[in-house]
Length: 146
Image: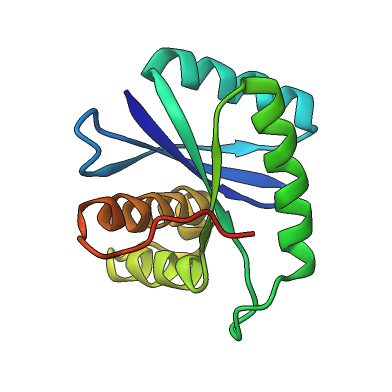
């Protein structure tokens, strides 16, 4: 059984899936989002293909830890996803993951056009890897964010 990580935006959703040992996150795709129904249909195919049992969604908090306007949209999508797929959804702090993903891609030597194609997938990997690392860390709380 695996865990799926999502970086949910208004236009795209970056997707990552863990290995079966829950040690590493691998980027899968960036979904261009036209509507929630189509997005959830696609995510359902991945859930079934990879035997996903939990979904981790990046929670875009403000730098001071307070909820953001985008976070409300992400929560609404996450609630719909949880209802439709009947899987637990965990909201995970995603502050600075897109910045880190952008820096990672720049270090790889990709130009800005190429970085734009991959930044959401890499951000999803960072979100999921952070969650997976917390599972292996004794004393770290894995509580969903509200």
